Image (tube, rainbow, N blue to C red):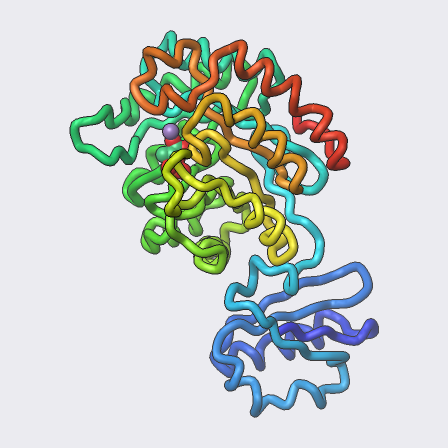
Length: 339
Ligand code: PEP
Ligand code: MN
């Protein structure tokens, strides 16, 4: 429920109403605006009935939030959220390009990848250290050793870095190395992990589960937000459908839809979204055209030798060409590239 106070209301009246909401067993939210204070009440809204807030002299209007997700909804906040990542931010008028290898493999590999990302205008470095592989016999990642290598490569190239977290027990250790966490498709509904990430304040890229609906994705974001971490970036990375020609079906309709329903920034992963190197650039341009706030793409200095996802990874020339082709689409969408 959203409770809009009259313009004359002060913090004193707001606090009085917030205490009532809390006593009724709902979560109170305080959202001061430029013209008036807005309050929220989250939980079983039937409990509010007895409070008769509508009759309160300082309450101008009360309206229910119609969506199942509340705090991440546009109804709760009409303006776009911006999430700080390194010295730059994602959302609200910029287009961010985060790039790097699927997995951190060696010192040389992550250094070369970081150089490529920086050289052509990427604003952040990605690299997996804990790889959620379908087969237990596939390369699983260098774990903490890999994070150390990525932190160094990122620092040398003046880039913030992001890596996937697969287990709540790694959050504290990983915090020493990464500027942002990624929650992968396979963990989108790992509620313990969502809650753990909700309790820190580093940004998190939350990827859509491979068979998750948009509502489930936004409810997963709500779990993180509800624990206190509001620095959430939604990522559309394709869903599994009957189509087998591409690795996944990149649902760009979801991007446009989420932008209307949520204030959180939305980025697109055209690498996992297609699984095919040649399709990465066209879908990156489509992402900019449909209103995304950025992309996260896989780049490897030598994709043929990559230990994971080489077929969808761009080499230096591929990344250079992606960036060149993308810029006019970013301008056409009324955005500027995030530096
Ligand atoms: C990845 O980013 O390398 C990855 C495993 O992504 P997803 O969780 O989207 O499959
Ligand atoms: Mn990958």
